[in-house]
Length: 326
Ligand code: XMP
Image (tube, rainbow, N blue to C red):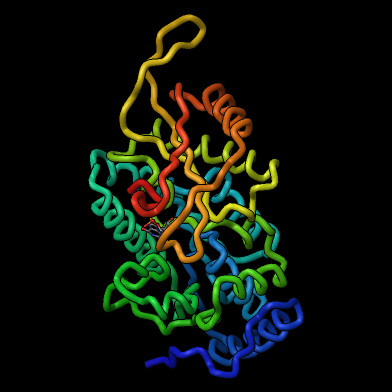
C-alpha cells in the first residue's frame, strides 16, 4: 500500500521558488519511477490533470500518452484549449476522443440526477478503457490525485481517478501531486507555464454541464447552458469578479415560460445564474452581484442564447440550496 500521508516536514508551496524546487524533485522522482516505460493519463483539462500532464511531459516526454475524452459536457472552448496547449504548444502525445454522441445517446431520457452521474462516470471509464486497450506496452497510469482526495477519500471522489478499470487492465499508479493542496497545485501549474485560465479556474464538477442541464439532457438545452455560461464567465472576467467569486455558472431548468420577442409570443427556456462564495463547499453564501451587471448579463443571454427568453438570479444560500442544482 502506498504511503498516503503528507510528510510532516513538507513546506507549504506558496512561492515560485518552492514550486521550482518541488518540480525539480518530482522530475527526478518521475524519471526514476518510470525509466524508459510508458505512461497513460486521462487529461480532462482541469488544473490537477493538467499539472500532472505538464510534469510528465517534462519528465518523460513522448513516453506519456494523454487521453482527452470530450463527453460533450465541458465548458465552451475547453476541449479546443486542451488540444492547443498540450498537443500544439507542449508537443505531447495526445489522443482526442470525440465521445459527444456516445454520452448524449446514453443520457437521453435520463432525468434522475444520480443516475445521470453514474452513466457519465461509467461511460467515461468505458471510453478510456477502449483507448487504453488500443495502446501497447503501457505500464503506468498517472492520476491527478491531490491531498484532499486522499483525506476525504470515499466513494464520491471517484471523479478524480479512473479507478474502476477492469482487472486485466491494471497499471502501476503515478501520482506526483498527491500530497499537494489545491492552492499548491495552482502555484506549481503557474510555474510550469500553464495558462492562467487553466491554473486558476473555478471548481467544475466531474459530470460537468450535465448537472446544470436539469432533468433529461437535450442538445438544445445543453447548448443553452454552455453558451450562457460562456457569457457569464466573460462578463465576470470583464467586471473584476473572476478569481473573486468562488464559483459561478448557469443552469437551464427543464420547463418553459412565455415571453415576447419582436412583437411575437415565445415559449422558451429560462436561464438561472448562480454565483456563490464558500470556504469548503459545505455551506455557501450568495455573491452580491451589482444589479446593473445582472441586467447587462440578462440582456446578453436573452439576445445571444437560442431558445432562452428569461433570466433568473438564484438568491439561495447553502443551506438550503446546494451549490449545483442537481
Ligand atoms: P453541492 O452542489 O453539493 O456542490 O453544494 C459542492 C461542490 O461540489 C461540486 N460538485 C461536484 N464535483 N462531481 C464533482 O467533481 C460531482 O458529482 C459534483 N457535484 C457537485 C460543486 O460544483 C461544488 O463546487
